[in-house]
Image (cartoon, rainbow, N blue to C red):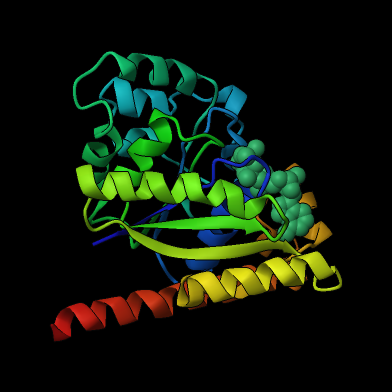
Amino acid sequence: MARVIAIANQKGGVGKTTTSVNLSAALALSGCVVLLVDLDPQGNATMGSGVDKRNLDLSIYDWLMENEPLETVAVEGSGGFKVMPGNTDLTAAEVELLNEDKRTERLSQKLSAAQNIFDYVIIDCPPSLSILTINALIASDGVLIPMQCEYYALEGLTALLETVERVREEANKDLMIEGLLRTMYDPRNSLTRDVSRQLMDYFGEAVFRTVIPRNVRLAEAPSHGLPATHYDKRSRGAVAYMALAAELRRRHMSILYKEKES
Ligand code: ATP
Ligand code: MG
């Protein structure tokens, strides 16, 4: 069974797409079969995986709304994983979904066909708590929340956690917080250290031990259509995402183990 993980935070520019692309690549390098679903009309995860969003035969719109099968729409990315590519057509899907029954369960239904093919499905969410993000939360086993350790980061978190709670109550009772991920981390900044400490105090084990440093290679890699793990595998950013993949897999193993025990 695939583990489906939504990468979500309605705050913009916190590292969702960078995490989606590099975590997908790092999991693939560790031997997992991975699908990255680009659920953001900006199409940044598509481009960052080496797939030109302006030049697609079929896109996630055709999969979600037009019954095209996953195998015909998903393409091979540059990082050793499959990409369900997205672009501005997704905005039309968003509007069309609003008029449908089961509008929040579409992605979940579609992904059932992927359960036996992939080890991990990573969903890059848009920077909003829109119907697309709700679709992702309902389709997922866990939500991974990237955040920058800055003052306003914690405020935004409340709305996201409330949404997660509502999804749990109404549609997906097993949705877990996969973890909070500190991104663009700069240990020389005292505010970063303070906010980081608050996060650890409040959320404890839910905070990934791995931190993603601020690293220019992570910012450069997308313009080459590559994950940083392939653009410069020795960079601090690439190494951090490899560590995150290992930490995530360890956590996943321990969840499976506990389920077996009980
Ligand atoms: P949006 O909300 O618009 O979808 P996002 O949350 O997906 O944004 P990214 O696109 O991943 O965020 O990152 C925002 C910007 O910061 C990008 O230019 C990216 O290259 C850069 N960036 C992300 N993580 C890092 C990092 N660890 N070090 C340096 N630059 C980074
Ligand atoms: Mg993004």
